[in-house]
Length: 98
Image 1 (cartoon, one colour):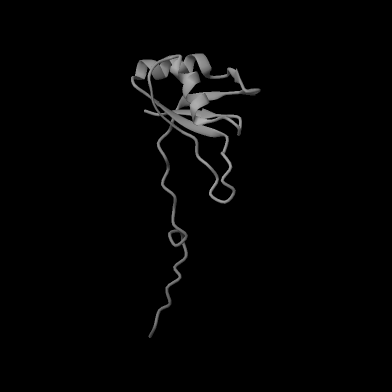
Image 2: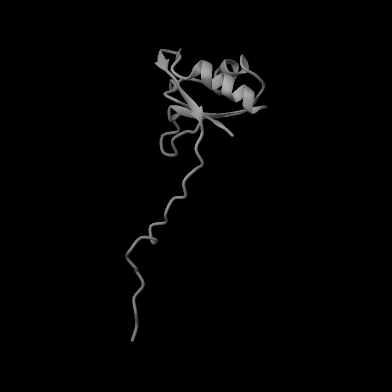
């Protein structure tokens, strides 16, 4: 399961995040989402590691740790919630014809 990494510095790179987590095991992937409109990093990311034991070690060591001037929030990522489409909520925009 991926690790959620919150409160990241906006200047942090994938390589820097990978280097920090590599101290606790093999990093399979680092993802740092960017804002669609501005292209700026959003201040959080996801890290996937080889084993659950490595993930647990990284979470234990890095949650609350200061890095690049910020206190990291590190925990197991929660499953992504489905977004509701604009048409799925109460009102029906269809027009009835008689």
